Length: 60
Image 1: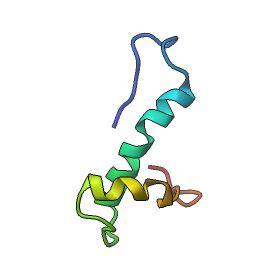
Image 2: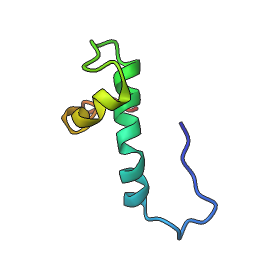
Image 3: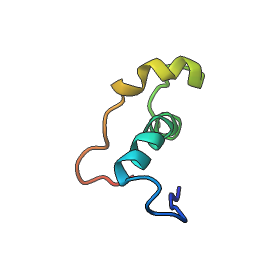
Image 4: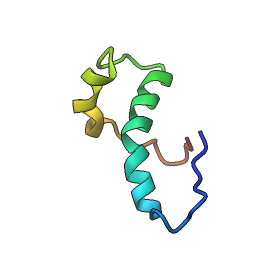
C-alpha cells in the first residue's frame, strides 16, 4: 500500500495516519492468519480500537 499526496500541505502526517488507520486495521485482520473476529467490515468496525499495533521489530 502506498500513500502519497500531490499537495503535501493539504493534510498533516497525523491526519493522513488517522484517516487510513481503520482501513489498515481491517486489512490486517484479513491478511493475518488469526481467526477473524467479525466476517464483515460493518461487524469489525466497532472492534477496530481493540486491534493492537504490530509487535516491535515487525514492520507492516
